[in-house]
Length: 358
Image 1 (cartoon, rainbow, N blue to C red):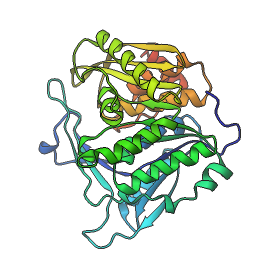
Image 2: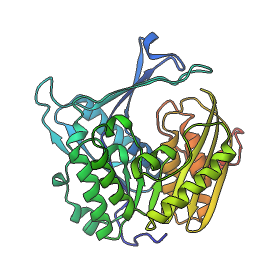
Image 3: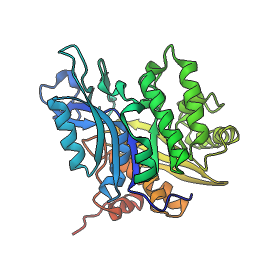
Image 4: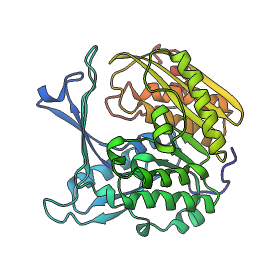
């Protein structure tokens, strides 16, 4: 995959930032916990975290509640994670106005699965609008190697849907490669199926990298594929190959199609794998056991590692291996994103080497 030669930003992600609250006592459910840990969060910055921590220039496009201490907390967090940001300051509009989303979650333990509660009423990220960003400056003057879009942002509101579509069109105009993680959420799509289907189809038609699970591809793009769930991962691999083959016929502009494979043994032990079609070559990371501290963010970690491998111009086989390992890495953190110390740490995870490094 040929990427731009002259650029300021390796990776740009539009997102709606919020906070995540989890029990301080790891493994305990929220409803029994009186002490909660607060972190800044979004799926898209979880993806960008891999490239940012490993030294590539990353920019976040978002929006903030003006004067909010939560907005200040988020800005400081993004700086600490080596990410630049750009975004409009929106007036709160009183106590019943705008705010940053709240994600309340626990990690589960053993036979008790994790639970996640999203509180997105009044979410300021739903106001993301193309009018608030200079796309010609961003893509034309500064230069971007890779734009990563998420279906979560595309489906937040009419404004964000148009925003993602215009970002994709501008990226295409300036020869920036586009990654699109479909990320279907049924509650976001309710009553807007045709509107969002058309937006997602246009973005997919000009994307270079398409990522999603069986439900994402079938519900967003209406492509035939395997049923969700099931325990036979070997059969799922063959089903995914057939589904991706169907998608490639409909969306031939992309040169990379990828998805993760997961079987939950219990909350703290998963079988973790992945599959990718690059050009006409299949690459498979066979599912193997990983220990899980908190599963939330593992998929984003996978995408982040995949994009990092592409940005580093590695051989495609290494893209998937690194992505598998950064996804596994994310599940070992209390945050919903992984913070790789260096590439060596990630490759040690892929190699199954958990020995102490002195």
